[in-house]
Length: 200
Image 1 (cartoon, rainbow, N blue to C red):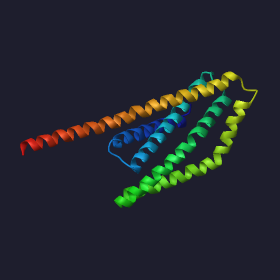
Image 2: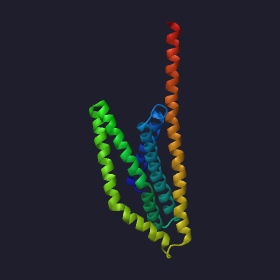
Image 3: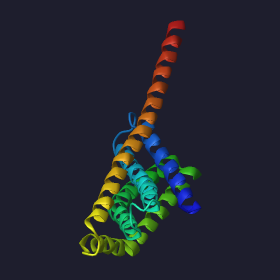
Image 4: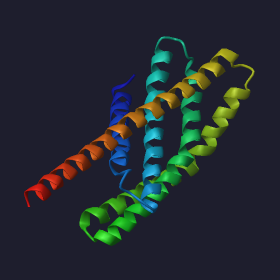
């Protein structure tokens, strides 16, 4: 595993954890389209964790010789094929929400965030148009090839399934952390209001 891959794993994990935590923080107080945006944020978090776990498990199994290089490439391609459309769809929702926030608040930070999300979503769409067909064909060729043994195919499917389960668990963990933090703050606020009312 190269240093670049290690950095990607660390950064991806931090971003995904922050997304899940942030969604947990606002979950109990958001309504309407904001709730939809929170769901989109959770989808992005799960997708990010899937990439992290696939990279980690994939390179470890390939390093110990449990997964062949062509199977590893098929695993990466399959991961991209299965998460790219949900990520793009969620990105569009988050971009719309960021523009709504920018119009409401009319500050530089919100505007910059909206522009960034717009650019990121547009780039993801462009990348998908360029990459998705080849990735899809790679997956089809791998699973339909008679040269690939059934063990390699089963390993790819198993690793991806494990990565999905681990990602759901990781997202839920940080989402709950965010929810608990908000719940604690609400309790403290109620406690302070009760004491102020008692003294008045």
